[in-house]
Image (cartoon, rainbow, N blue to C red; front, side, top):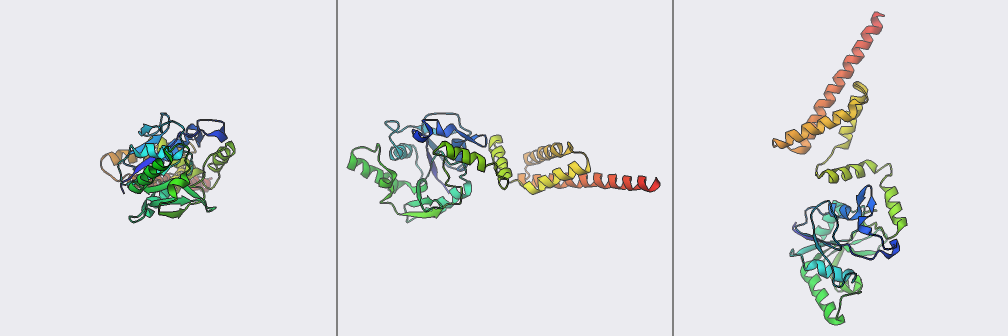
Length: 289
């Protein structure tokens, strides 16, 4: 599905004391990078805000005047896009995921003006939405003609006349960081026992620039077998070698996920053979004693 993405990232962050909110980190990664990771296949990604280092290349622009508010920011971003479908994402969503983005894009079906996320409390989130570019440009032009400026206009003035589908948010997908308390809560949530491994693996993949489905259970089982059947330090070294072998196989044309699975299987079988030998030797020594 072809689309462009706009990420407004130039707000004043008054509730954060004017801090550079997009640069604040959750799980060791900037909020802006987390949002950009949710839309990696956007044809063009435009960030409306001051330039900064980002994990992947983007286009930069600013509303005129800077700080003109969300409608002005969307207008500035739209001027740098050409796709018929435009994804709009706020820059402070630490738990936004690709599945939510895909759901929004699919819900913005032809015949409607787009699709907007609705949080679990029933509140619309116009900065987490997929819009048809033509009606969005039309409404922005009408607002500019009516008010003489877009500066300071609320988003509801833009979305009121649009026919938008509503997509109910997953529990954390719409969680945003408006205050220091929100940021602390996000940092605590990312370390919760039930999700910390998934969050960590996602962060590492993004940091390393790889997009690979990881069978976490298989790798953990391999690490356990290597630790128990050989020696504890064998666990991290073995998983490293599996990754290296899988990368080498992928370079020759193999499917990366299958390469990881095959390398894991071979290493796990070897670890079990080591364990069987150790058990047999131990039994023989006990019997002869």
